[in-house]
Image 1 (tube, one colour):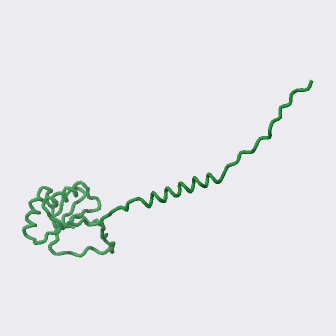
Image 2 (cartoon, rainbow, N blue to C red):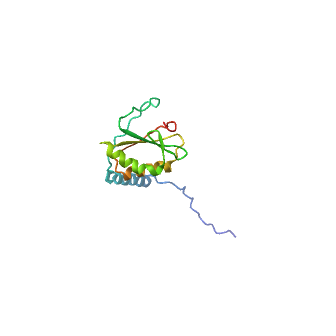
Length: 143
């Protein structure tokens, strides 16, 4: 007796259809382009940044500019004179009365602590002095 034969069709190989894949990629590309074109531009404030100069050359001395320097020990120097941090508000008021356009340069030595420097800046702000500069390079203590 012969067995029943089952005719199996030969299996087809799996294929990746490339045309639907290209359609999906173009759809994503078009969506991305339309999305980026619809974004609002970021509004910003124009800022004139300072230009770097010679580091070796000391800054020019400006008349009537007060220098307050903070040292690594937390000492404060008022134009090279060692003072206490509590003296700053009274001295700032006196300085404002003496000078028509008060200008202050806040400096620090190479290991000055930022906390004391912030306290000095707070006192300058409380005294309503608007012309304040921060020195960008360190100097020897008390100079």
